[in-house]
Image 1 (cartoon, rainbow, N blue to C red):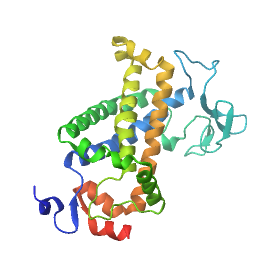
Image 2 (image 1 turned 180 degrees about the vertical axis):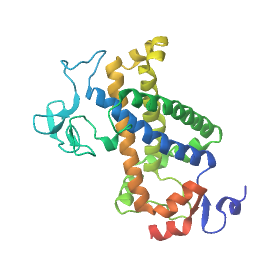
Image 3 (image 1 turned 180 degrees about the horizontal axis):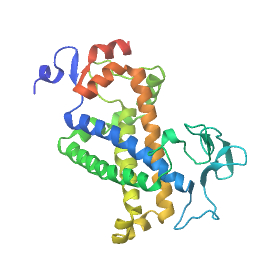
Image 4 (image 1 turned 90 degrees about the vertical axis):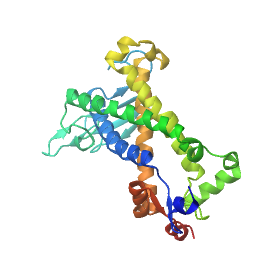
Length: 277
């Protein structure tokens, strides 16, 4: 393919392949549904433990719930008041509730563990197929090696620090007329694609009753059912944090150009030069 075909002219670069764009938008919907249904499942027992077993009388490393007058998050021995948001909140009818997560953060919005599990498990299989399909195709078309793996020179302390300072100055794009990922993007996407997503999938699969019965050794890999549940929660929290930071950076980097590139594939380089100037 010629440079002209690749760039689409002096001001445009074909940045995102069809596979990347489809996977991005499918996951945007699927992850929101999984996160919100997962919070409803968590509401059924809002405590996390390490090991094989866990019950209300056991020591939890994390718990979210009500106090006599408010709500709180307890991490170890640290208590964080969260009245009105977590642990104790008011629903749409003005009724005070004492569940961990509020109605607006869960699917379904009213307490229904069975429905939440159906939502969660139904979209989970789409999530698994889409994620592994995308990884296999990205390995086949060399997207991972070409665009996501950082070069040795990018991992030097000097280069890393420059990228950090560029981000602090809100300079997110290269100034060489290209639209390649910077090293912080590569490291972050690598963490998400090769650590958080696979661990979320494997811990979720290991806790599935049917698959757990067929492959009981999977829970042993994570130190027991409660450890798998804790790891699943932590990796999910990491994904939620990534989504929040990602959306903030999209807004700061120029939402029109960023959204357009993820819909059409074409990134306007002129906007890059202006932003980075």
